[in-house]
Length: 347
Image (tube, rainbow, N blue to C red; front, side):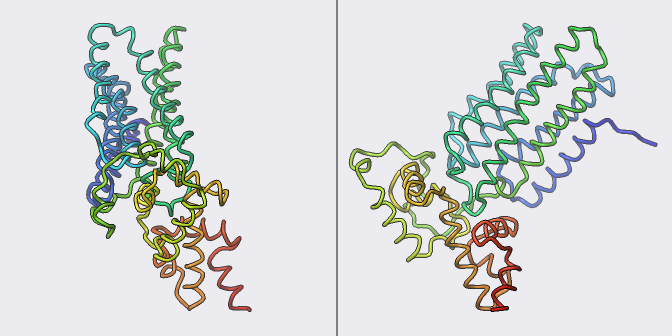
């Protein structure tokens, strides 16, 4: 009977899902690169610690250093900003620094690697704390799920940092067998978590090249959050923003656009996205996605009442996935779509 070590199993799983993601061509490039890097790292861990290929030992920390930097850039690319920017390339200098340390000061490898993982994980958590659930470039139909996924990924990075610290501690206390166990449990679990969560359609969905928005909107490549408001914009009352927003959303039924994001909504209004999200929260007490999804669920109820199927009503109301639709429908109506239909027909 062939027995494979846990890191090798993780590498094979991640490699398989990477190939499927590439074939389907639905995953953004940065997330696909992150998935592949996690698979390669898990393979290296397996080869070094379980198959005796010690010549690869010095490569392992260098490839490991790529993961948190790539995770950060993927986070920016899929959630915060509209496009990859040249300044983001500075983060890919992290593995170069690690290569120098591996060559000149190998004693610093473990503390530096732990610091890199913990630093990037903390940076993602801090960015999410500032943004809340209103990520600029994630579909509003997904609600709080994208932010939750990135929080879990950030925690997985921090767990990897803790595992590196534990490995150093066990070696210092003369426990030579402990690193293999720690790598099998902590590091493999963290890599598997990062890799599989990167596949989630709530963060891995490609943004459309042309979604039917005006040229002024689609040509906007400015990063989110939007630039600071001008003095004139800063003095605009919240009620004015909300009045313009309701005109745009209700009369033009903008909520039916399944690819609608906070960044696109703010561009259509002509206000900084932070100002838009603050106005919605101040007036409704809810974030942007909940505000938009209420219109979508109301529209879906109308479609269901006309006799449409749940799937047809979902797609016609601006939702991309059934899980998001069911979650938001239950939150807003207190019932599942099937329960709502049954109750409506009984009346």
